[in-house]
Image 1 (tube, rainbow, N blue to C red):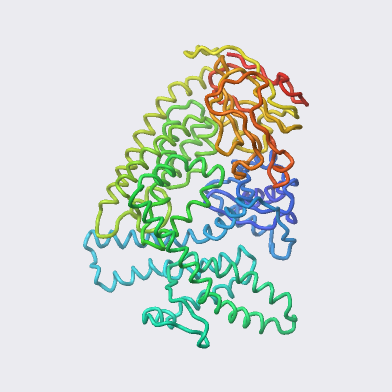
Image 2 (cartoon, rainbow, N blue to C red):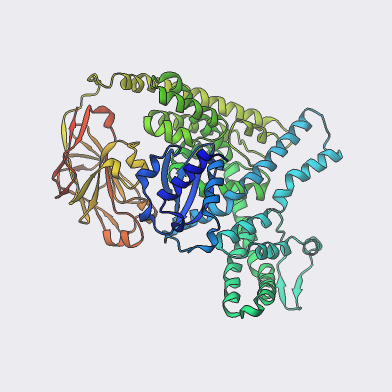
Amino acid sequence: MTKEYQALAKQIIEKLGGKQNITTVYHCQTRLRFKVQDATRIQKDELEHLDGVTMYLFNAGVHQVVIGTYVKDVFEEVEAELGDLESQNQTEEKLPFLQNVISFVAAVFQPIIPALSGAGMVKAVLALLVVFKLITNTSQTYIMLTTFADGVFYFLPLILAFTTAQKLKSNPILAVGVVAMMLHPNWTTFVTAGKPVLFFDFIPFTLATYTSSVIPAILVVFVQSYIEKFYYKYIPKSVELVFVPLLTFLTMGVLAFSLLGPIGAIIGQVLANAFMYLSTNVSWLPPVLIGGLLPVMVMFGIHNAVAPLGIMQMAQLGYESIFGPGALVSNMAQATAATVVALRTKDKKMKQIATSGAITGYMGITEPILYGVSLPKKYPLYASMIGGALGGLYAGLTHVHRFATGSSGLPAVLLYIGDNTMAFFWNIIIAMLITIVTTAVITYLLSLKYEKTDLTSTIPSVKSIIIEDEVLKSPLAGQVKALEKADDPVFASGALGQGFVINPNEDLLVSPIEGEVLTVFPTKHAIGLKSKNGMEILIHIGLNTVELAGDHFETFVKEGDQVSVGQKLIHFDKFAIENKGYNSQIPVIITNSANYSNIELVSESQVESLETVAKVEA
C-alpha cells in the first residue's frame, strides 16, 4: 500500500458520494465494484478524470470503477477508508429483474474464482508431471496432488453456501453448517447403500449426492435466508442465540434432504444434460459466441452471468467447454489487436496504452485494452471479434474442453491437458494460432486506413464511397444533448459512431430520413435506417431496454421497408418503461460516421419532431 493509492482511494470515495453513500465494495481483476444508496450523488465526469481511473461504468446493478492491474492495492486503501460497512444504512437501489439476477450470480461466483483458479493450475501441474513421466498415477504424490486440486471442487457446495449467504445478508456460518449436513459421510453411506431413508419413519429423504454440486447449495441457502430472518424476527433477543441456530438447523435439515436438495439435484441434472447436448451436437456454438462477443459481453456485464455456467459444467461433467475456450481465444485476439496498434500508431500515449495492455491481455486481463484501445479506435474491436470467432469455431469443431477452471491467458493452455490425452492441448494451441494470425492480419489491414486517417486528420480525406451532405432530423420531440452526455458509457464513448441523444417528450418515433429500414431488433427497442444518400442511422429507444423483451413497444415497419420522412416507426410506452426503472433516453447514432468529414450538432435544446438537429458533411 502506498500514499499514492491512499489518495486515489479517498478521491474515488468522494466522487461516489462519500462514505455514507457506499453500501458494498469488492473488486475483480481490474475494477472496483460498488453499490450505493443514491446514484444521483455520483460525480461521473469527475470520477473518470481522476489520475488512475480508466473509466466508470454501471452494469448489473453495480457501479464499476475501472482501475487496471493494481486494483487490489487501491481496493485495500478503499476498504481501509470505508471501515465497517455493515454498520451503515444498507438500503440499495431497486434494480430490474434481469439486473438483479446478474448481480446475484456475480456476487456468488466471483469471490470463488481465485480458489478455482488455484486448484485448476494444480491440476495442470499434475497433468504435466504425468505426461513427462515424473510421477505415476498410482503414486502417493499423485494422490495427494489430486487431493490438493479436487478439495475445492469436492467441497464447492460449502464455498457457495458462504458466498450466497453473504450476498443474501444471512449468517454465512449457519449456511455452511446446513450445507455441511448434505456432505456428511453418514448421508453418503445412505446414498451408497441405496435404501430408502425415512425421517421419523414418515418423511422421505430422496437419495442424492451433493458433493461437487452447485444448484442444491444455492437453493438451500436462498430459502434459509428467509427462514433465518423469520426466526430472528419472532424469537426474543434474550434466547435467539440458542433457538435461532437450533430451529434453523432442524428446519433446513428437513427441507434440504426432503425437498430443496432433490429439486436442486434435478435442476443440476437438467443442466448436465444440456451441457452434454451442447458438447456433443453443437460443440462449435458456445466458443464461437464467446470468442466473438466476449468484449461486448464485458461492456454490458453479461459475462458475469455466462461464466458461472462453465463452473456448473465442470462440477457436473468434470470438464468445461461453455466459456473457457471462447474466452481464451477472445483474449488472445484482443491482445493481438493491441499489439498491432502499438506497432502501427504514431500516438505516443496510445502506443504506451496498447503495449502495456497487450502484455496483460496475453495473461488474460483485457479490460485495459477494451477501454483504452478497442473502444476509442473501434477497428481493433472489430478485428478481435472476427479473429476470436474464427478461433472459437476451430476449438468448437474439435470439441476442445478444459479440465479445470482458471484464468483465460497463455498459462491457461495447461488446463487443457487431461483425460490421458494431449489432443485438447494441441487443438487449443491451433485455435489460438488461428485467432492470432487472423486478428493480426485484419487489424493491420484496417490500420492502413484508420491509422493513416489519424495521421492526416487535418487534411481533407478523399473517400472511395460517394456520400452526400445531409441534415439529420429529430425522430420525435424532446431535449437534445450531445452524445458524450449520454447516460450509457458505450454510446457516450462514440464506439458505435457519432450522433446525439434525446430525452423524449412523446411516445411515437417517426422516420427522420427518406430511405430504407435496415433492421428492426426482435425486442423492438431499436431500429436501423439508411437514407437514400447513404447515411446509416441507429435509433435506440431507452438504455438496457433489451431486457424488456419487446414489452411496451409496437413496431409499424419491418426490415427492407422503404420509409419516408415522418412515417411512423415505433410506438413505446415511455411511462411504463421508466416505471420499471429503465432510462428512456434515446441515442441516435450515425453508424457510418467514418465516411463523413464532419458531423455538427446544431444545438442542444428542446426540439419538435422532425426539427433539424445535426448537419452531416461528406
